[in-house]
Amino acid sequence: MKRKPLLITMGDAAGIGPEIIAKAFRDAPAEMAGCVVVGDVATLRRAAALVAAPLALPVAQLQALADVSSVPPRCIAVLQKCELTASVPYGLVSDLAGKAAADCIVWAARAVLAGEAVGMVTAPIHKEALAAAGGWVAGFPGHTEMLQAEAAAFLGKPVSEVPVRMMLANDELKTVLVSIHMSLKRAIEAVTFDNVLQTLRITHSAVSASLGRPPRIAVAGLNPHAGEGGLFGSEEQTIIAPAIAAAKAEGLDVCGPFAPDTVFMRARNTPAKPGEFDVVVAMYHDQGLIPVKYLGVEQGVNVTLGLPLVRTSPDHGTAFDIAGTGQADASSLLAAIRMARQLAG
Image (cartoon, rainbow, N blue to C red; front, side):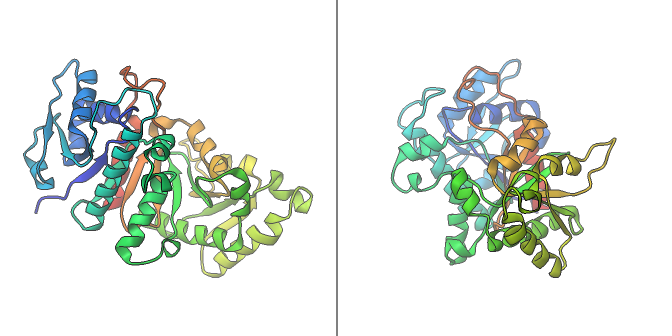
């Protein structure tokens, strides 16, 4: 039986998404075998022309997912699942690009949920472009929320009953976030007993599946020095520690809360010094993402936990400043593809 394809959404047409997809097909044909790009054929042809040297890089428009089996190596297989009525300039926010990116994401998610593909890897989108697109697209600040809504609709549940979390991972460090895309003020308000405990449960379940054993979970505090016994804030004592205790009572291997400025170093896994923990739960977006990105975005992968589908993405954005120059690095996209295949089994 032929293996189902892995879908790659093209991302924002004004950014580096199409370019890194083209480079991945050019430079890693074996890893890209069985991958189908959900996007705009003309946009992918523009990207292929940008990076084609020293090899020709044809783009094949598929009529159905099953047609990917007939596509030769280094040929970009594309399903046209969005509409771009005009070519989108590189590096500029575009409502057309925002709408096209969202249409691709929704189509790919529904295909994976329907069992037509093993998973999806999403190239970067631009949040301002989503907002500029208006309509239903503007209601979603990013991939995570859009995919959560699609999963909830598929399961016939309210969005609130399909909790998801973001994990950023590379070979040295994994972090999971209690809150995702919101202001810092709202993120602090989101540090509640229920949210922290739910994050610990989701982390335990998802990382156990990938490791093949229960993970050692460290929890970062919210305040400097994890509150220093209440001197710098009480959230560690009144919210985070009780959630950790509840998780331990359920059998989870959880420790903390630890000082945020040292816990990530303790969890970092290198050949010279294995990490003390398998994953760190961080209280808000930048607290967890800065340490992983500092280690290098080239191998970083964003994984959405809690969905009834496999979704990964590169650890970087649309990079409007270099879009169209041919400078973009496809390493993180390839790492995301490898991670998706691993999670899909």
